[in-house]
Amino acid sequence: MKYKVTESENISTVFLDGEIDMDVADNVREVVFPLIDSGKEVHLNLKGVQYMDSSGISVIVESNQRAKEKNTKVELKEVSQPVEKVLAMARKFL
Amino acid sequence: MNTEATNLSEKKDFLVRSSSLKDVRSFSREVFEKFKIDENLREELVLAIAEAAQNIVKHAYKDYPDTQDRMAVRISCTDKELEIAFFDKGKPVEESKVKHRAIDDVKPGGLGTFFIQEIMDSIKFKEGDKPWINNLVLTKKL
Image 1 (cartoon, rainbow over the protein chains, first blue to last red):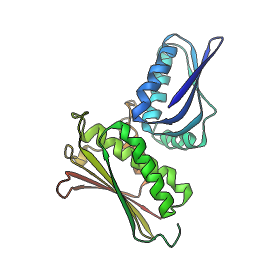
Image 2: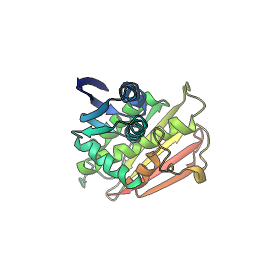
Image 3: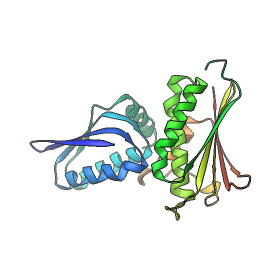
Image 4: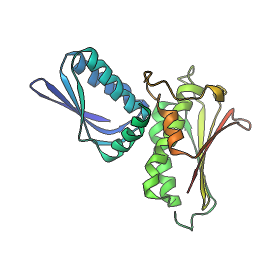
């Protein structure tokens, strides 16, 4: 999994690339959580994510919960088709 | 599915750890290509397989993160059904405890069992024949 972070005013955009599974979920948390904790709005750009499992969904849910606690928000941008399919399945549960 | 793909079976073993999950996915994709499984089904089947393998790493070997044990994945198919079997030597699975998490409990991998249930037609836990301890069998009608 690779990533890139861009900054624009009070928005940090994290471009994630590759496959997000249990093995790399903590790496994503290490990138995203400090941005949320700084109070910035965080956009997760998932255009380059070809695969995501339940661990990736958990990172998104945890990020949203964390953002609410910090009075900011997390938004998903340019969700790839494979990720959208998994999100659709997760929405039935969440 | 191509009608030429009848009674096929492929099996491979993997070290029980999270870094093996990408190898499990690669193996599954290769087998589905070889078996000519419907492309629209492949990625969700890969997800179900990866979630089941993840459960072995997370639960059957919860207290043994540095184990050198291996788990095996066998993918078999006939014209009508795909069967995916998992074999491991970890802590015996208590089937009554295998359920997806509550909505507000979203720890990593917590949705995995739900995904498997959504994707597959049946889930059966069996005692593994020696040397295996656990044998999980997932099936999907084709």
